[in-house]
Image (cartoon, rainbow, N blue to C red; front, side):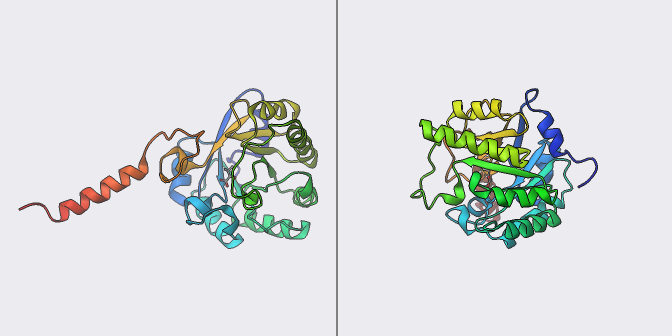
Amino acid sequence: MDSDRIAPATVLGWKGSRRFGALTAYDFPMARLLDEAGVPVLLVGDSLGMVVLGHPDTTHVTMADMLHHVRAVARARPKALVGADLPYRAYDTPEQALANAHALVGAGADFVKAEGGSEILPQIRAIRAAGIPFCGHLGMLPQHVLEEGGKYRVKGRDEAGRQRILADARALEEAGAFACVLELVNPPVAAEVTRACTRMATIGIGSGPDCDGQILVTPDLVGAFPWFTPRFVVPRVQTGQAIREAAAGWLRELNPPS
Ligand code: KIV
């Protein structure tokens, strides 16, 4: 890791004092632009599968895809902490999780993220034992969307769901995760996890305002994937429409009316 790069401990140190933002990046220019804007955490998320590679969900993303995009982001040499998702079926065993986490770090990631709670504790322990910073992901787990009938549903709405999320968050914290994404978690439950876990920063997405940090898929924020926008995101610009207009205007000027 570059010595002037933001460290996981710095992000954790903001807990309770400063809300931080995190955004996804999949290539060199976006990583550089977001870094220049001062975004402290960049995630090479496997959302890449949908918003860059055109797959219907994240289950199609491979380690080769992730390595290719982590290297592109790392070439921007951002000051931001760079995370990378372990993709679907890349952490079925502790050995596989560790080998793939090492590969992502070798490509330029500072931390790795994987989806799940108690069921992936052996994998998390293997990653942490090797000294690799780890970020969890609880709530709605996109890699399991097919098992959920293709629906992205809010989690933690009933008491059993609330208890499961709290128990999983405590287990991840105990295993040494410095942060945990809470995706589509019922906001009061996300707030409860944020208060309960004092040694792990929560990073919410569609989980209400009371998390330590917030993360968005950058194309959603900048209107670069205009065919679908999650209901909790208000795009700040419409780059998709700006691209259409720029291209159409240029085409028109190739054959000006005589
Ligand atoms: O893949 C991704 O981009 C993510 C974020 C939505 C947190 O996991």
